[in-house]
Length: 454
Ligand code: 9MR
Image 1 (tube, protein in one colour):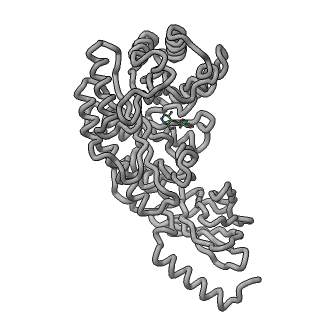
Image 2: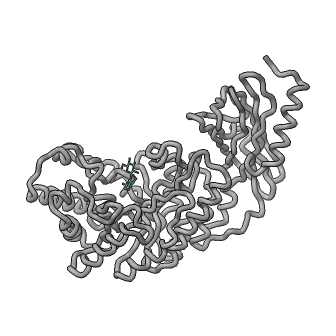
Image 3: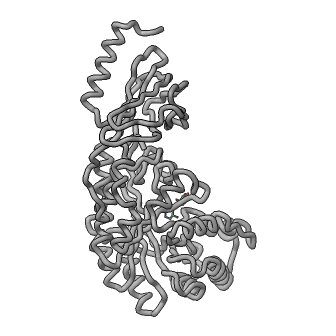
């Protein structure tokens, strides 16, 4: 049953008052406008002699995802495509399709590739993990795998994460297929095999929870020191940096520096900073400060070659499935709108921070609401800027569902809504606005979402 006009007015007044008080939360500025004057991250990084990379999923490298990956980053790491379980699921049967695709894409985009990863305890094929191997067989399998995969991409990859995650938190060696079969020497063997297969690639050991000075990073430090002393080929250490909001280790720069002082390069290889969902402006501001601190620590040390984010968009992040209830860990939201973390990365790389002189904004409001349904509208207005087309997005926080839209094409996947202009109203002149409307269903509550324009 429809709410009567008079009671609706009371509700509307309350909503509008709320909107006025929390305008920033309800209105999205066109981030594209803000960044248009700034250089892409890859140019800012290159000017500082640094790598700014991202992990990618090959099948997604088209459309907006592909455009951002190519425009903003000068290095790619295949998130899964080069792992042993991906490339040799059945013994002797190889699938290089996604790995090749990513390398081809990177070359076409003028990007480096970081190979990831050759010797690990996880994501191995079951034929390998379920087999019973003598040390000689295991060593042969490992060396052949390295020779084959590194050899396949010889001369095309800048870097390899040769050994991944060899340590426990207390600094002892992780009991893995490799350690149990070959002892700690598997690491030297793997590095030696990788050097033989591609003498030009930089060879790394990569681990997590080794960002600050602690027992685990000290074990890694001691290992690298001894490998260097023995003349084993080791060029760098990868600090993964899967961090938690507000918990950037205070000793990050000091730790990077101590590895650099050993004579190896350092890379931040898998940066993401997760938070309890839902995100809000306070958390996103904190996250931006955290991203900036990590970037600044790398920028401050000459031998820190750069930073790679573990997925650049929240729609392509491992966090929500591994840590239920957590997410929003990357610099772009699920609709590819840059978050405050994006600007923080740009700033740490020397990018401009001046606010744009002109901007377009999108404002979401509920114009009427009844027991199960509501009508909403989004107004896109420009001042000192103009648009020839637009796209807005938001995430419903309470199970609302768009059922019908007009003057825009809207699609909803889960709680994420994306709307783009109808052919006749894409143009928003400087000083002008357009509005589109929609009907939706709701129950319980109907909170106004944060809308992004970009
Ligand atoms: O991002 C990867 C995810 O898609 C996989 O499901 C996961 C399986 O362990 O591996 C993720 O990447 C990992 C990386 O290879 C090594 N460091 C930890 C990363 C997150 O798990």
